Length: 272
Image 1 (cartoon, rainbow, N blue to C red):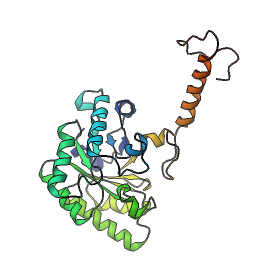
Image 2 (image 1 turned 120 degrees about the vertical axis):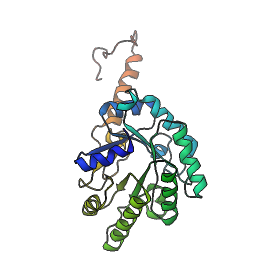
Image 3 (image 1 turned 90 degrees about the vertical axis):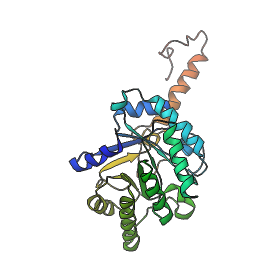
Image 4 (image 1 turned 60 degrees about the vertical axis):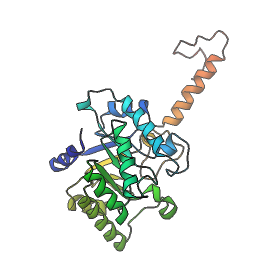
């Protein structure tokens, strides 16, 4: 899968699917499930590293996890999903040269086929243009941008006509700068629909309704592994509860006299 394939998917009306992964195990699961894109999102700061926001994750940590995700993919390269990795906070906001070096470092030392970055401020647009000229595919990200949590919070964005028009202009700027696709997070569905129709590049929504070219979700949220769910991504499985219960049962079994650690069956009389 290549970044250019996504524009072809949009043109043919095929829905684009994207899921996050943060290590080899999660990547294997996402690949087997059939996602078009595996996003090594900086959400791994919370999912995997225990931080309260995405801000603390470093470039080297993003590389480490991207490499692990790449090792978790087992299909032939031509059949693997497209791997996109997030540029972390302050890796692209401090000058063009530093941004190119950061993005190139991630792609040079992993199998990632592109990077994602947030926002459409003039400085960010300049970064995108430079990266694209250097041959680095870029996915944009508008709406709720988690790296701006201290300014925007986690609230729904673009709720009034003025901010909606601003976002439409930003989306057009990202397309002109050379983004091959963009994530649109936690904005009204009608606005997402306008952007999908206005733009030639795919609009991949999360909390932006169904009127998008594709959808992305944090895998840990869908599997119910996180203690708290975002309002726009309900769990499809009570994974945390099921996992805790399975482990609790195993621990109880091992505490029984004469327990066999190789058996998959609980002892007689067990609630497990």
